[in-house]
Length: 118
Image 1 (cartoon, helix red, strand yellow):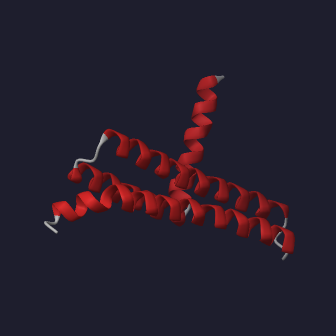
Image 2: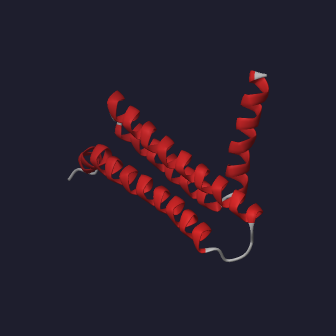
């Protein structure tokens, strides 16, 4: 039973990675942040904060995508309430992404400037 649940979850991640350009963009940004953190030798606490921010953005993106797909099944017609719900989901992804950028700048900014000799 648990193995099947983990399998379903892994399948959901695979669907998001393969089928959603937005998710792929977030994964690219994640890779860049991880590389920067490794090159700059950030602290264990910084890694923890970056990991939480990365997870927050990816989870928000996956929930946004899931809700979009459910809405597409419900109706293809223009519905203002569905549009509002989808816009709120997109806004949640934007807020999570903006927060992650700010945290990334705080955690990586100074080490990057030092690394660049500034």
